[in-house]
Image (tube, rainbow, N blue to C red):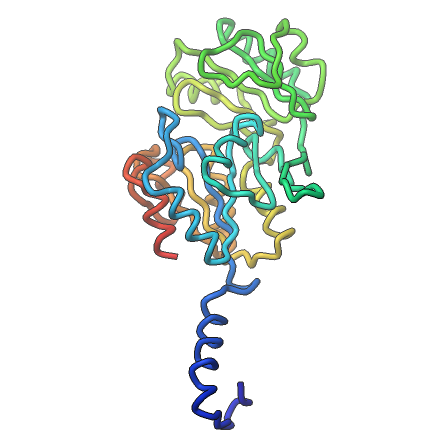
Length: 298
């Protein structure tokens, strides 16, 4: 290309090739134009019956082909995340699991096959929290995730993925530092859990209420946003080139993080009102393909 303010005349036979090269250069985003796209799983790309949101695979593929980094940021453990990643046909450099307490990094073997290793893990001592919750919810089911990814639980639930997990007595749950505590009380409502959190003062840890009576507790100050900031810095993506999608209270931290740095936060239409209010944008519901609709506009 000629210097600014100058004219360079090219032979006619070279003109078409030159125009094509310019067009190709404009179509492929460089490091400054690449976006970091972080997707929650449940209620965002996945319906309650474990099927994928309409159009999500094609929309993710198109975003990836345009040069953007599409990754998952979920409350699930890695064992419950990896098969969703395969369904979406993506192999991002990083994955955020356990509500931000765990970041995994992709590694490639000599044959080119990708796998993931635990890159960064946050932990806390769960003893006080577990005793408080057991006092108020003696009938609840408890699970903890250890630093190495192994999970311990007191009683199984039919919808829990129990790979890399084993059943133990309640007392064993508190014997090691953990990256998360999960509490499920089938006979209680979401409102019951919200009231309980206020009553017992869960202010030394971060927590999120799930779709039903599900309480997910992470180390203090840790959420999807803190993990994504770590990933963003490692990838070198400008903060204003971030877009995150979610539908639950555990997504509000990453909404606030993205918006505070000039990025975008998109809430699903079926999410609670406070979650929709926390986002900068809303899309249609997961059953209507809300994520795909936004990705197609990028």
